[in-house]
Length: 256
Image 1 (spheres, rainbow, N blue to C red):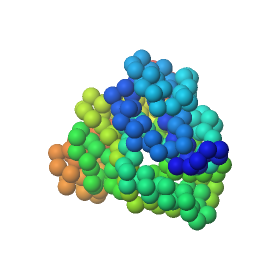
Image 2: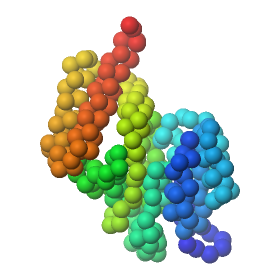
Image 3: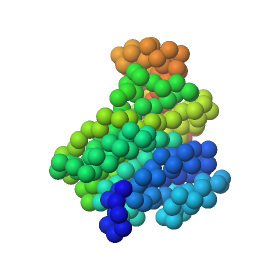
């Protein structure tokens, strides 16, 4: 994207056991001036595949999503940073739009990108998933990730623009993937709420779970996404219920 010397764009990724996805992901960001990867103990070929694309591959421990992405950010040298995950793909159209945006950012500190996500093989157009604008492209000296253990976000100092071409997200390839993430994300979410002094009881867990299903399937028109829309609404409800149920148990000191 730029000549020798000062780097314009750094791509940063955090990985663990992403051997099934990482090669295709890295191929879509080969236009960047550098790619920085932080791996937290992969047992598959993730690290070796990443080293085929970049020499900036580092192995470290796991402090949570937000802190880990800030570690990757600290190792980037580009004026601009694009943060993506291993299950995301930058289309040629989005890559071209990113190039134009960086040629003339018009004083913006960052750009939101619409994200098109799939659930068990189907791209979801409703259910609150589209357009899922995420701030992923930002000036390195003007942005930072929050320290959240999960569902971290970028906070920038300055105005933010919006791109039009989507980032493609293969978020849940199977029901096993859904269940794994429901479990891990609900644990992280409960821990974050507990640290902030939040409390819950069984009624709270059931109520929030029911509302999550109704909000996704009815208010956000998930019923128009077919059977996958129903499954998505149900898994959202399960994740919400387990998050508050785990918070309830944390508040009781995990007594049985």
